[in-house]
Length: 360
Image (tube, rainbow, N blue to C red; front, top):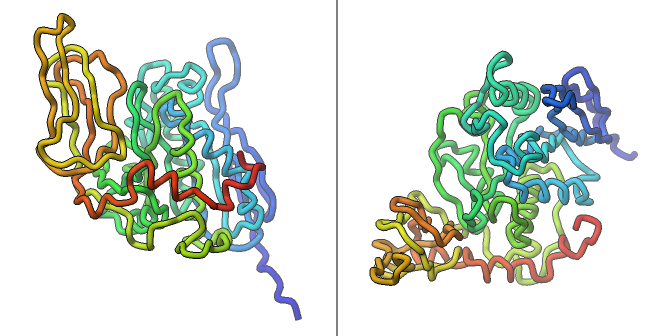
């Protein structure tokens, strides 16, 4: 006798119901733009036939961080989600206002990721934060928030998580990122507000604002699918001989972990010539770049005082004194093996996920 699939209840969100085995885009009313155009928070709900957890995946909390929007778009098209257990809430654009304006902020210049949990009667940022927390986060068991570096900076693909939150750390490890960076919770952030509700959230960082980076997109997409597999929400890829998992050349548990990271800042204003790249391991005393005055009279060298992995850097040559230029995570050379860009890109070779044209 064939075993029957357990019957699931309808998924309800803001008075809308989604049947098991179906997906639907729900537009949650938010505000009215100045030209009378309705503004909404749009969520695609994929409600699996089989029981399982609920996870939200969000992007563009900062409106200029478009890379996560592409990750969500590809995820929506991924065949693995056709046989989903549990429920996935996909929000490709949280900050609609900033996305349209190609700006990090909302029209009132508020940072949405410092406005949680928000208020139904507060500023525009507070209202959007309140809507997202109550309609999306509160319905979830876990969350993944997709980010990039700010404009004129670039980040190595990485996961940031509060390592004191064991559930969130376990989720981060299942992502299998190039590196995990300890990041304490900051009041007003999505992670902090979600944590108050008992919903562990990790942040993916990669690439730069208003730009696509194919390597970072692939790391993000594959990482999200890894998390869904670890939660038994989707099936597993067929293994490639010699690899632990398809497209992965590092063994389980080998993800480098950085408990500390710090920025090297410009000690002088001028023109910066940075010699290092993200994903590069540097030893203490390494020359990272030079800041020169525009007349070429004075050069100020930048060196690192510690061994570590470069996880972020500025791309802007014009700098003021105090500007953050190079972000270094404290890692041993052995721990950083596999975190560099070359190793990351090699990890995609032969991966069947990226042979599927329908998700690209």
